[in-house]
Amino acid sequence: MLNHEQLFSAALQINEPLYVKKVDFDLPKGELNIHIDFRKGAKFKCPICGQDHLSVHDTSEKTWRHLNFFQYKAFLHCRTPRVACPQDGVHLASVPWATPGSGFTLLFEALVLQLAMCMPLGKIAELLGEHDTRLWRLVHRYVDGARQKADYSGIESVGVDETSSKKGHKYVSLFVDMDKAQVVHVAEGKDSSTVTSFKNMLVSREIKPTQIQNVCADMSPAFRKGVQEEFPWAKLTFDKFHVVKLMNEALDKVRRNEQQDQTVLKRSRYLWLHNPNNLKKDQADKLAGLSSMNLKTARAYRIKLALQDVYSNTSDKVSAMMQLKFWYSWATRSKLKPITEFARTVKNNWAGILNYFDSNLTNGILEGMNSIVQSARNRAKGYRNINNFIAMIFLLGGKLKLEIHPTWNT
Image (tube, rainbow, N blue to C red; front, side, top):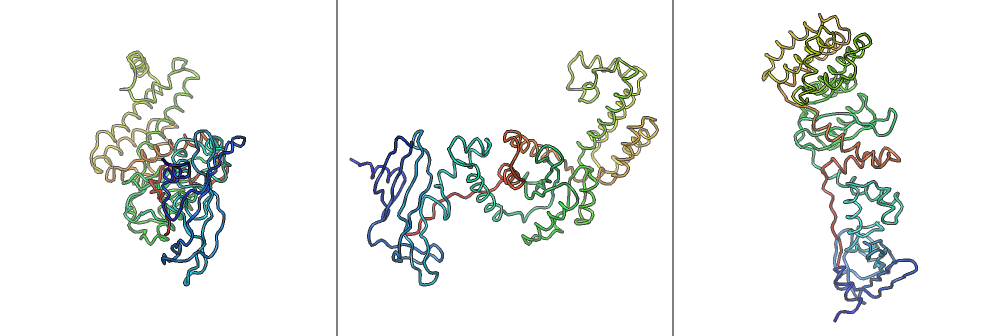
């Protein structure tokens, strides 16, 4: 029959020359302390070069936080050997339950990383009885290590979008591999320098910037400037959803201006902005009635539907250009100021809008990523600093391989 020490050795998968020497349970403190030692005369590997059968030079007492034992905190204590390597000198031997320099066991770290996917680190710290600063160091260590090993060499099409890091005008820009739906770079701010930062990241990884052939973005002048300066050979596609969103904003300006005289338009915003196929029968009937009236908003609505038809009914760039020219002529002659201003925006971004019909790229992936990131930010009620926010973005959207494995050298 196993005694306590043998039982915990088996549970922790500790093998010779390691063994559990003693187990103490401190009920007043609510702590389980497991003391680990090694057999006299044991030999170990150098943690630097891997040379085997090295004698113990001396020992150092180390402690690691482990998974809870029921509701109680658990700690591993080990008289950790330091080995004398003729090549690398004296170094602390690695242990199978933790990475060098960590105060947590691998299983504890795996738990924190898993919880961090769906909980704010502040709540995790409260749940586990740890300071969140220690947990953030843990997250940064794994995320930074995984980012260094991540392979971005195949990236050809990239999407870029900004997302707010906190209330106010604080933003970061996300760069996503559109083929893998993977965040590959995050830069502070939303100006053209973020594109330069992305290019520098590629160069630092010995990836030729010229392999970036497609860039998808909204019609931000800053992003357009950055792409034209840093990736002038790339085909820049303006996201069709952003184009339609701007059209909807222009339509709503017309409605708000007109409803001051036409009270029939009040509480009709939803009808004009949403897809007619998604309206209930009574809503569709009301929209049909309003559309048949001699309203400026109804004219703007028909212009909006015509723009949507360019995207939904056109399969090639030449046909799209012909339809868009007709739409532009109609919009500029509408005598509706918000619509004519939007039409000029379309003209100024003509090539990027038409590029969609070649690349078929949209920022839908980025919008989905943005939603995940903002949900995490809202749960956490913001982040203490921008680096924590960026680490969380990579944890949630970077598709990183977080390597958690023992490295015991015997």
